[in-house]
Amino acid sequence: AQRVTQPEKLLSVFKGAPVELKCNYSYSGSPELFWYVQYSRQRLQLLLRHISRESIKGFTADLNKGETSFHLKKPFAQEEDSAMYYCALSKGTGANSKLTFGKGITLSVRP
Amino acid sequence: GAGVSQSPSNKVTEKGKDVELRCDPISGHTALYWYRQSLGQGLEFLIYFQGNSAPDKSGLPSDRFSAERTGGSVSTLTIQRTQQEDSAVYLCASSSRTGATGELFFGEGSRLTVL
Image 1: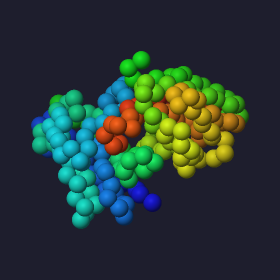
Image 2: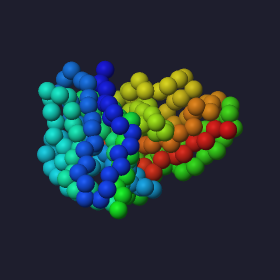
Image 3: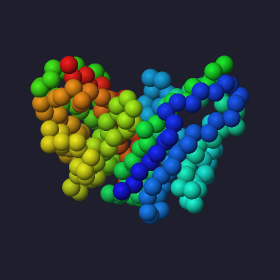
């Protein structure tokens, strides 16, 4: 069965510091990986997906199949990045489209 | 409405009572998911509906949990004989069959507290 591991529960950094939120997965096939974010008092929402290879709000994430990782990175953290971040995996489309989430990590960016 | 709507937003109940949580997905979205969000446990998959296909119930934690989706739209999650460990935020999400894989749109959740 697929599994998503986020090894840390909390990351606290100062504004302007680099950020790396770790995510590892286990799945024998070719998964699709995502990062979802939940800001305070807001809904959980998609941040980015690996197939798009995009940078959203300065965040990027590269799928490393050799290390089965999908770490989320940002070179210079901003206070507004403070939120709960979840890594998620999908096996594909249709019946396989359900997302398996990690336990999440709280990012706190201090001024 | 424009987004996924859930009700009630908060529900406090006594142990042993039944509760119903409602989800109204985005119009036209064929896929509907229920997740449970609890502190330290992240997001736990409960059940998935896709069109007229049989639902994927593999995540329901016990037979006290059930869900229906009527007319391919509104869904109701029912928890019978609630226990204190059922206390959590229950999130509903929907997605479009034609949308990018994995792009789920979430509701604000129903916070359940079992006393």
